[in-house]
Image 1 (cartoon, rainbow, N blue to C red):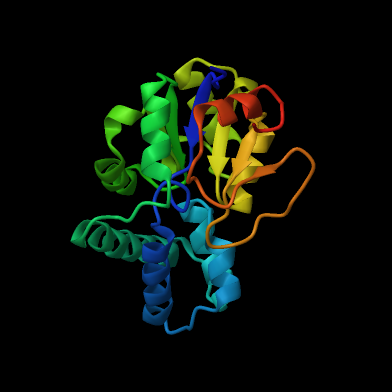
Image 2 (image 1 turned 135 degrees about the horizontal axis):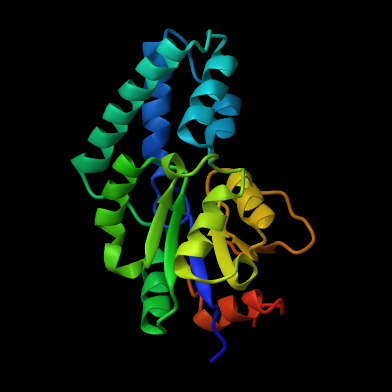
Length: 225
């Protein structure tokens, strides 16, 4: 069986359908700040790291992004997302559970690679199962979050596989850019917003039916079987 040397998974919007919970929180935060969140601003936040997302949000809403204001907003947002993540089970994206199980059965090393900060990622891992992952890297654990490549380079280092031999699975333009810049072959499974088609990008409508062999072909630079 052809298989990839390692798979690096994004979390929000890829494995978990958690972007919908983030949507509730950021729209409520905008209201707390006396503004209304537009879809354009909301879409610009998808895939961004926490600090970048807040700056994008403040600029889009016409608010002064002072360190104090950003800090207060960040604390409010974390508290609200924590509440949403712990009130009920975080929903899975279609096919994600089966894909994780297939890779685990084939003993393919996996890492979770997310711009979400560690304190919130731990709730995601409660749903996903920590046993599936060799390691996890969060946006607050690298110098620069996605779209910079730092987070993928660190994940590849932790699994002990060169980035060009790791398949990254992403849903957002920001995450895809980070993985590509790190040198990873990327499987794109869009969720909330479209990802532009470009040479070398392989797309799927969902994770349903994803096989280890398909990812192995992608890692080897061959068309998926």
